[in-house]
Length: 106
Length: 116
Image (cartoon, rainbow over all chains, first blue to last red; front, side, top):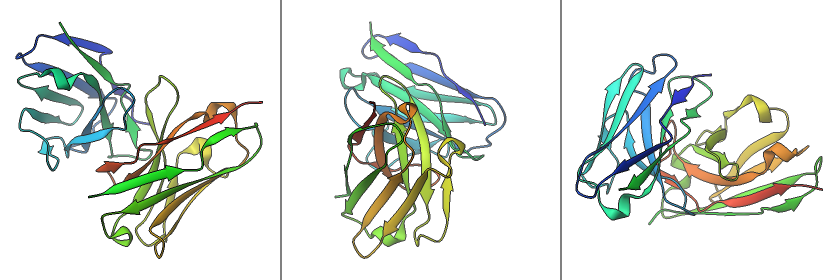
């Protein structure tokens, strides 16, 4: 299985940039997707195909990367962005998710 | 508006069965692959199974192969997950999700607790 590694947590000040990384144990090309999950809610798709913004998602959110190293960025961070962010690969079966990065406000 | 509403969760004893349902609305159900994704308490997300738009193909993670069955009724716009021989490690919130290979829409989830 492809393992996706994320840092457990990130603290950022409001109005600043948040950068979340996801490293794959082998190349997934551009088959990386990002989700936001707020406390007690279902996940929400933000980015698909490494860099494509999902419908209705603000342009403050963006994604980049290919191969094994991927970055998800929120710029600027707003209070409503407090959540856990997950990456997910679809290059190989089984589909796998990262363990999530919890975004906290300083 | 896309809506996915799961039902059928609850408390079940180890070794027993449970069937989850997901009622879909707001889109043409038979145009989309569908999936189940689970999340153990305080844990991350784990893909469980996927079914093609017409039900002709199904895919499972290894840990549920032979125990879980994903199916759909396109006439009723409903997705199902039949879970047999349940284990304590199957305890999780189960989400119905639309799409493959990424999940564009998710239901609110239904909690399955496997315990004696």
